[in-house]
Length: 173
Image (tube, rainbow, N blue to C red):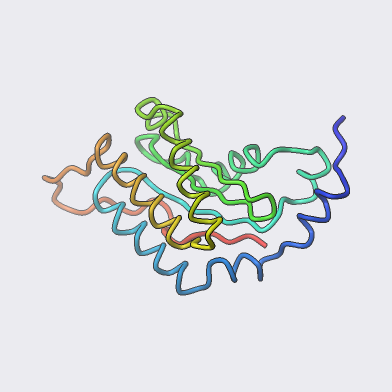
């Protein structure tokens, strides 16, 4: 069984929700939620943003990677529960400066893995410069373009499609 390192444990325990709120204050989260809502009016996909200060102790104890937590949050936030299997989770783990993008199967089949990595790299560059809101806004725009290209909203629909998931980013301390 893997053992957590003291250094990793300390790093994750030192980050808390206040750190996440400093990186993305309430007004920034509201603007990001509005971007998600505007995006979802153009396609049938769902976009969720999750910012987590540090991993739960159970993940640290198992020395689990950030990707495992992102996949778990993909399920917990019900991003997988979209009609066309085209949800996307943008996940940030502040304690490790990790960015994970989890795309549901239908969209993952349309987009090469290298494209997701380019998006992660661009987000990382913005975050290193302290531009968390801009990095996420750019990522939402990029995911929006992919979803609109592969899963456009039916322009002839009589009523707008119901919003299956909340648009506001989730912040976990």
